[in-house]
Every structure is written in structure tokens, then in C-alpha cells.
Image (cartoon, rainbow, N blue to C red; front, side):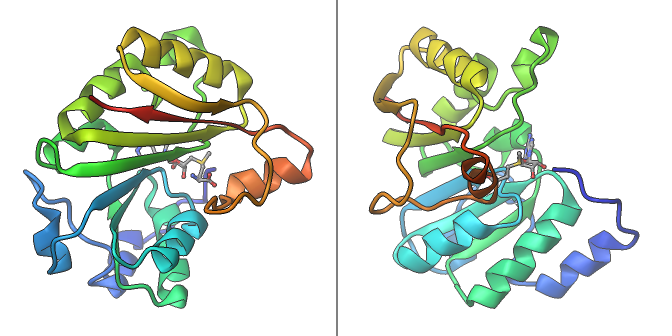
Length: 209
Ligand SMILES: C[S@@+](CC[C@H](N)C(=O)[O-])C[C@H]1O[C@@H](n2cnc3c(N)ncnc32)[C@H](O)[C@@H]1O
């Protein structure tokens, strides 16, 4: 998803003070939320449908949504504001720097939904499920922390399962055709689009030691 470059987007994001937060070097996100609570993080929130719905359903969780494109984050900020949920912070940030903004062991759950597949082999390290990223997640994940992963892309899913195995991570509940409307599951924007086209959705959960 690429939105047209919007002049003054950095200024526009300031409208959402209190929701769009600054990266916190070293982490300590309970300070940002003003309460201790399990921390769940979504990488690549897109327009924020998933995280806003989840935060409304799970008020006892602190949610941080990370998005690399400021124009897309702006859309997410509008959506979260409309849902009036207080337990989300949104960050304009690249997931590559994730170890700089969370303390070791701080994150209880990571969500990666329909991340860019980077189909060329020479770009494999950019995939958010590559071994390079898994090594970073391992630092910030709490013991027993989970990564919930969904994608439409069968090649990316196969690659990811291999990377999880190579990293020695436990993988559970693997499905290559996730039924729609399961209890507790929330659909993302991309998922809605793919389901309309009849594309099967792959999903799994990964447990960090
Ligand atoms: C294909 S879209 C999926 C959006 C949403 N998760 C969904 O399922 O509808 C991927 C999103 O991840 C963002 N993204 C890609 N690489 C990223 C990175 N390294 N760090 C943060 N966000 C990233 C993109 O800007 C884009 O908004």
C-alpha cells in the first residue's frame, strides 16, 4: 500500500498528540500508557482497522502499532480516533529498529498481518519474518511471547515456516485456509480485500522461548 506523499504530513500527525507517540528509546511503554499492562505490538498497521478493533475488544492490553509510511499512519490515527479507544499508541517507525524502542522481554505478543512479501530473493532479509527480524524479536519478546502471523502469500508463508523452524521456534495452529469469522479473530483491510477475491488466508502462531 503506497499513498501519495502528503506535504506537511509530520505536522498533520501532531494533531493526534497522545495517540501518535514518539519512539521511546529503551522502551518502558507502561510509562507512556500510565499503567502496567501486557504489551501487544502490530508491525505495519496499515489504516488501523485491525488494531483499533482489537484494542476495543481487549481494553486490558496496551497496544502499540508501528507503521513506516506517515501518510498511512495518518489514516490509522483517524480510524483509531473515531473508535475512541485509549489503549493504543501509534508510531511512525521502521520495524527494522524495533530493538531500540522496546526493552528486552517487554513485548508479550507481536502481530504481523499481510506484510510486504518482497518476492525477489535478494530482498529476502527485508521480509518481516526473515531470520534477521526473528533475531530482533527474540530480544524484545517476553518468555513465552507469541507472534501471530497472517498472509495471503503462499510463498511467503512457506518461507516463513522455514525461517521459524531454522530459528528453533515452536509453531502452532498452522492453517493454509483460515475460515472467516472465527471467534476472537479480527479481519484486516488486506484480508477483507483478499477474501473478496477468493484468496486463501494462511495463519500460524509462533512461540518464543
Ligand atoms: C500490505 S500492507 C498490510 C496492512 C495491514 N497490516 C493489513 O493487513 O491490512 C503492509 C503495511 O506494512 C507497512 N510496512 C512495511 N514494511 C514496514 C516496516 N519495515 N516497518 C513498519 N511498517 C512497515 C507498509 O507501509 C504497509 O502499510
